[in-house]
Length: 298
Image 1 (tube, rainbow, N blue to C red):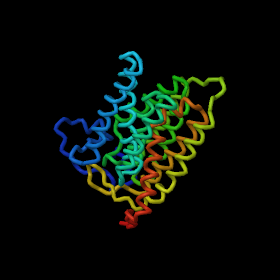
Image 2 (image 1 turned 90 degrees about the vertical axis):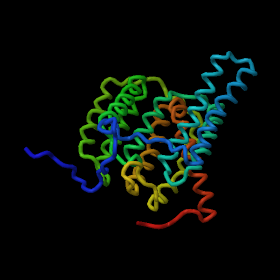
Image 3 (image 1 turned 180 degrees about the vertical axis):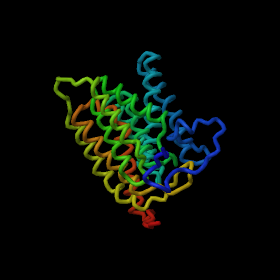
């Protein structure tokens, strides 16, 4: 029997030199280029935040161990918000710095949530927009599905549900991988062991306003993504605008679904992503006002 091929031709990545052979199992990894000025600033800011927050908390009387944990969480939140912003708007990096700073501020007012959600979100966004220049492979799928099922077991059943939806979406948009449909089935099967709490959801008005503001400010990004000039890391090809727009739309749907189904706790978990959306939206607004956005189709 002949091997079944991808129904979308012309979007598979080219041959990439990989002496370790790991690219056969992991396709969504993206190295950080320390030669770029903005990346250097982000790394230095992460270190500065960790040191500054540690000194601040210890000087205010907090136990040294707790102070270090809080500072590490703040620094990691800043870094994750920056990286998430690069997936939401790969054409403008400075929006990630704004989002990272807002995340640290948000942790002060709302507190930090489960960081596993940000790992899951990062992989989902890269799977949809193909910013790595490669499709998701077996190792990526294990990480995505395992983290979603684990979160579902912890009571956040919306994540295996949205994971299945993401795989279905990935299979249908331009350049999609047909086996994603099977992975959607596996993800949705994780709902079998998910915990469905009967307790009422606690959702405060400040969390609703914050996420509504983030979505409204981020919506213009979906239109501007049609003119993206960003390229995949491995294949050097321009990102497919329809995939990037689908990624942004899925992200907005995620914020609405998670916040209203799981309340403030989900809001804290998604805080770096929410702040990344605000940072991207604010920077895009400034770029539009200064006529720095290139409206050019390829």
